Image (tube, rainbow, N blue to C red; front, side, top):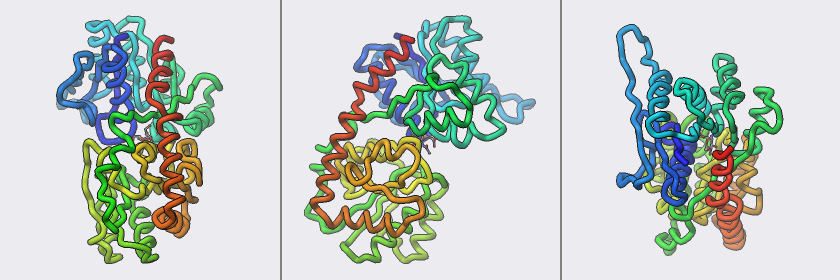
Length: 370
Ligand code: GMT
């Protein structure tokens, strides 16, 4: 099949998932994959496989435009790509503007193309649900041939917000590829060190509650259970406030900001615990990546997270405002070896069974065929 993939190139789970689907489809399943966007996907490797292609969208700037019309440029150039490369399927990640651009490009090209849309989270719960965007998001869902959501939580939320009939949206979970995240990576960890590494990875937006990361870590330090360090990976608007809070609490020497890292698997494997205090997550890719590396996760019991982590079995969950509970659970994982190895083991099993990449890729292939 010839597949075009539309996604955001900026750091974030939806772009990572889109890239990984494209990479596996091209390298392991023999399809011809065309990424289309402003920049190559975040994790795109320099030596492109022969089946992988990237098409940059050129934006036409002109003084009459207050904002250069990216979506129209995408539609027009995608329609050309459909014709030149005989595209069979467009897989759009994040509803706006990608699903709309795909539908319009299909019409403009006058070709028979299957439009598959994958909903990731805030494209529905925040952007799509906003009155300014609700009707166009609803149209994108209606006009897509196939719509998938990355969790049952997101599927139900979409059906509720947009009054979509049951059956239109299929839940297809995100997945993990052992090539990039696996427990063997932990063999590089210096286990003789007394110091425990607590990790947080995100784009540090308000929805990730970056200040809660600092507050929970501070509580953990106060328990004086052992020496600890917090490693923050990623970048975003919340970073400065995190730094300020760490200084105010006089723990700045124990908080390290490592910035955006790629590849991130070997770094995750060095952690003793992953902390995810988000307001909500439709899925929570960072949780799955940590589980695959054998790193126990402490996360909020919200959104689609309980579909990834079974509380007390493959990770520990806490209620949204329960900072004390979060710190206690984190400390228990660091001090109770039996608990942590049970959770580690279960996390690894779940990551490679429930979220096995081959199973999920095959699901997408079936959906592509209509
Ligand atoms: O919706 C977003 O916040 C953006 C998106 C992204 O690009 O990072 O994140 C969502 O998609 C990820 C991949 O499917 C999920 O793992 C995240 O949970 C989800 N984010 C939210 O629901 C807040």
